[in-house]
Image (tube, rainbow, N blue to C red; front, side, top):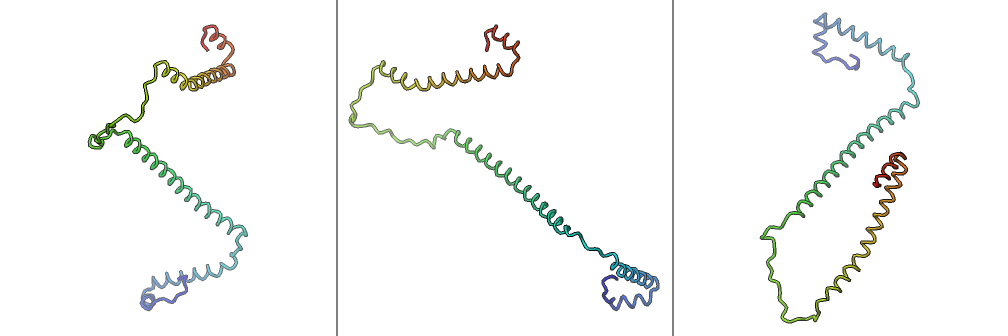
Length: 172
């Protein structure tokens, strides 16, 4: 009724023969005409900011969807990487099967190429002490730093009466 299109022939014939449908059609047409006539007085200009507000809402909706997709993608990548790492660790820690171990014969040298003697035990001990000295010194320094840090934290965080009792017991 409000489309302004002419009715098909079969509908016009029905309206001529059916008073109930004709009355309904005429009341509907009258209502549509009154509504169309009253629209002119009710028409208002939209707010100049309406377009911007609508577009802002549309854009924020798109960004929310993208952020959700990006978050899901990030989780998927993280889970996939964790699975790959776990599988790699399991695979690398697996003992090789007996058929995977190469059974190559160890070549025996025909003659001695290098004339080297076995060093004396005292010399070996000296080498060991010299090679371990930097590690031993670094370990001592780290332990001293840890003790100093613990004492500083204890002095700044623990109450004085608790510190006094632990000093008497010899535990600090």
